[in-house]
Length: 167
Image (tube, rainbow, N blue to C red):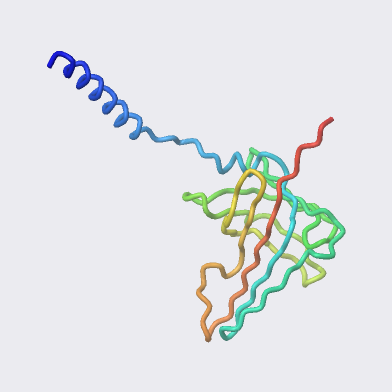
């Protein structure tokens, strides 16, 4: 009986510690740090069009000889170089939705003269994947369910993180 009391006290102490630690909320997020920790190079552009329940998928950026880079800064500014394989540098401001699943870059306008003028390609982009070395953004009609009566177009941009240059 004497040995059970210290054991019971220790078990109660551990239980109280677990309850207190499980209630702590961490307000810091790793998502902005993943965006701003380096430059993102475009690796692929996949466009999926659905019309009358027929889906076609086309891969773009296969013959572009320009490096396309997306850079996010800690002050919530961003730049995109050579969008749509056209020599240019577009700038804007980025933010995340409250649930951190959507990227907003509404004030960045890119030249798309090869396909028809100007565009805001990342005005609202769903974050499909984000890790230390890869980023996939999805734009277009990603929240519309394709049916036989509507047309949808979803563009997926795949990026890989580039190592910082050593000087």
